[in-house]
Amino acid sequence: MYNWSVQNAIVAFVDSLRPHSEQHHEMYMNALYNFVDMQSHLLTLLGYPPVG
Image (cartoon, rainbow, N blue to C red; front, side, top):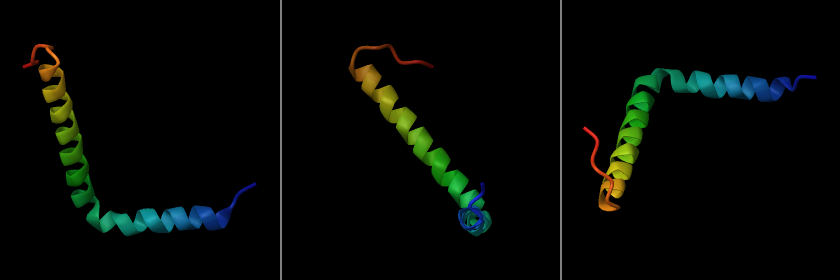
């Protein structure tokens, strides 16, 4: 069966994020870029050649 109170809580949470979706997207992209950049530096330190 369905737990409507949990579903309603999830919908309310998602709706509360909508006005700031651009900021959340920007934070996500920055975190993703920083993570990939850090891994690239780590692999370069371990001797792998840098990729374009």
